[in-house]
Image (cartoon, rainbow, N blue to C red; front, side, top):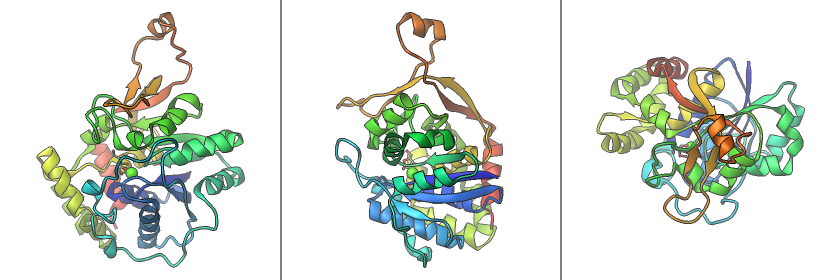
Length: 317
Ligand code: RIB
Ligand code: CA
């Protein structure tokens, strides 16, 4: 059993990731925290509640966190990808959850869940890393209760929101740098370089739609997102970034990782939000005076069909 906390900005692919956790019998979903990102905080929070309601999960506590980055204002949302409501303009397909948000904020909820957890917990940030940076700064003692942090973010060779940066990291580079460079908790980073290779095609989506009512709802939810990616990629398909990271969180080792130090560009300008992976040898790094002590496991490869089958088998219902 894997104890999980999801920090999220739903977001169509976030919805698939939350659904994957809800649909996995080997997951103990302790809580869901929300952050600004694809759309504003009020909408990401409402969407998280809705996806949990689709799976009947009135029991999972939800708490809202940061509605803005640590330092500079959020330049823009990702409505052009996720729709005005964050769920492909089809949020109406999902029920409202009877149980609203918990009476606390995201950082306090995460700290409380970690402190009371019997075993270390996997945290799965699939939006900007603001809440995670705040958690580790305000509650350093919880580090010992974190099994690992499995992050969807970064693009080592590609960007999406800019030529060089991926949306989650770009949305709050200072927070990302704190988590990926200055903190020291076991971390897996699942970047665009891999998530783009895990694209699911029209046939995959058709199988999901035919699997049952929840699968059909997810496919209806992804329609506009599928249209964006089909135009963007030139194929009939979608890139379910967050679900790929969630799959690794649930099934450690599903993705192949390489471990190296990373850094995050925080200076204003065209490279802001870029993740720089230092692939040099330890000797070369040492000779250049780099303190390569903090390393991150970067997901670089996978049996792509196995990932797609893992997602489909779990989400089919
Ligand atoms: O760049 C992809 C990431 O940004 C995903 O988490 C997506 O939901 C958006 O938040
Ligand atoms: Ca997301």
